[in-house]
Amino acid sequence: MSLKHFHIVFLFFAILCDSGFWLWTRMAPDVAARVGAQGLGMIAGWTSLLLVIYGVWYVTKKCRTIIIG
Image 1 (cartoon, rainbow, N blue to C red):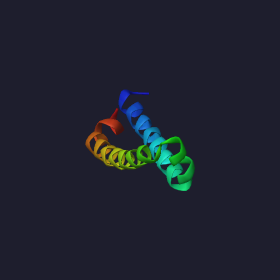
Image 2: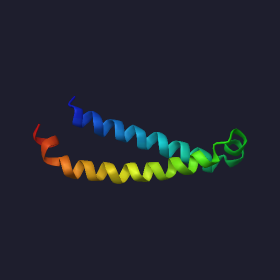
Image 3: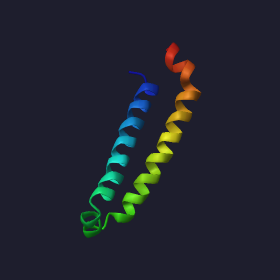
């Protein structure tokens, strides 16, 4: 696995974890507020959106070099 492929896999799991944390803070707001994670959930939501934008940009930028080799 090349470094470019690893970068895409890492981005996928980072987006998955950030989105999951944001969803948890939205589905269980009382628990999130009790542990003090309400603000972090908002940050995780915005971070996951930024990572999606970066992932699309990265794949379109590196598309030829990823497919060729």
